[in-house]
Length: 254
Image (cartoon, rainbow, N blue to C red):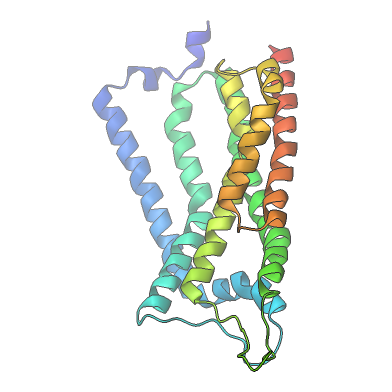
């Protein structure tokens, strides 16, 4: 009975047709990504202003700036911004293409099981990106800017931050991606539980190892200050506990 739930056309497609279908979905995804990146390049200055705003709010004052030391650095920085924002903008199209390729090969109950993950993945990524932009980055930038000494001391020279635009934006984009992917923990662990690789009891028993792993990941991904590391590690610990609860609920439904 369950076999009849699956699309008969999909099950009867030869391998070559599957590959052609995959190529078509990849082409649609690539075109959507390229068009979104070109559109975002047109608005690269606005995206730059948005990403640099946390630093501008910390470095209040006259003649504060970001610099570039290479002739092509600013151009390639705008290209990175366009690709970065294009990935965000085209993700719904890419996700739909992935779903349209995979869905015909799934049973109805499997479609119902995976649809929530398809929705939760971008939602959690946006939550992680918003968290790092609005909470972590302002605190981290304020900490690092605190090492400035604008007034000369002991007949020395003042210390003033003049960050490179490419280096700054690369750091911001890395943090946004890192937090966004780390916030996928509930999705990942719940999927692993559905395929039988983990269960709620094993996750609970290995909590101490998870804590060590989370703090290690936080130390690697965040700037080298304790506060930033804690601001990533604490939410991840909460997400781990939520994951254990979601896995337990999934097991009870089975």
